[in-house]
Figure 1 (cartoon, one colour):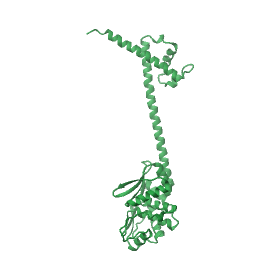
Figure 2 (cartoon, rainbow, N blue to C red):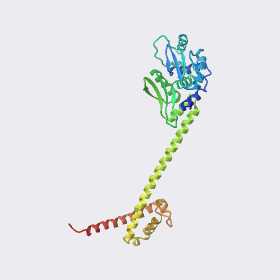
Figure 3 (cartoon, rainbow, N blue to C red):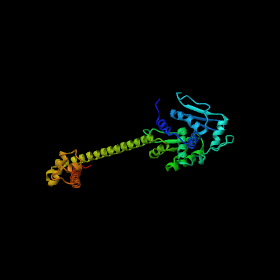
Figure 4 (spheres, rainbow, N blue to C red):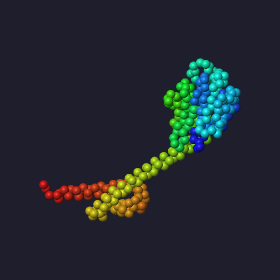
Length: 317
């Protein structure tokens, strides 16, 4: 089964091992506040990440010295589900974070647990592993953390702002709270903080490639528009010269205008800048533009005279 970009990023984050127990506790705190269920009756963590499933039992052993009551085989297909329902284990976990399992729980981030920078970092890693995702940057820029606890989302927002100096946006989705980022620069800043610098480089590379592609497309579109304008102008010049020749006025023009008309006819495909270099000596683009405008005026004058003559030749009603 192909691994998603989000799965690859989580695998990278899983390589960061908390060596201190306080950091293991903080990471488990983030996991529990962003997992599928964390109540006084049941803890349920669901993941598709094999790397996360591999480190999860070790984290809980390090933080609480307990084992899961139910855990999957890493070889099992699909989603992997970890559960704890033993009341004593749940009491112990709740007590570690300052909660009472027998009271109605309004879960929140216990700030003393994440006061140190290393613990704050570990908490956000846990939140991302349990409730986070990041979109493949080839498809778009989106990173999010999802929790069922409104106060947890608000407090996590503050922690992220303290960590990386910007705040995710917040939204309600299906009764839960979502923190999300849409800017590639913010995503590529947060991922290294969580321990995924390679994933961050992928985001930055995708952004650079997209910007370059857009720049090239804009240049091509601009060049195409300029070519269209140059062709249209050249056709107008050629039509004016044709009218002057048909009216036998071309040879009566001043030498500079005759030279301009001859070169325009010889090189109809050239832009003004290129055509200006064909003169001997070369003329400026401004000078050439002035001469061509004069040819256009003379051509329009002939056209207007022809229209007047035609009207005079029509029989009266």
